[in-house]
Image (cartoon, rainbow, N blue to C red; front, side, top):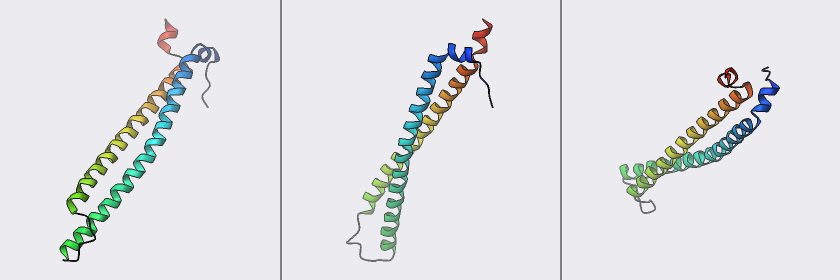
Length: 118
């Protein structure tokens, strides 16, 4: 278990608090983005299944009167993939922000060696 210097932590209390707030905010955003990512993945999966069903009917010359146009499905699928990509990218950004805040928090708890040497 890591032991921290109480004086160093007390001197950096405001910085520690701010880093902890950023860490919590990034964690909250990541949770929200995770939900959006799951929703986007589900939407992509459903559209892929719909496109597969329509394509199967086309190939087998089955009645397609109850099907949406394949071009419309593909357009929707492209948009859904873009939303998924964006959700994944934002989740990575939030993970990076969490790591940065955690690194700062640890640095402030341990005390910045350069500041102590000065």
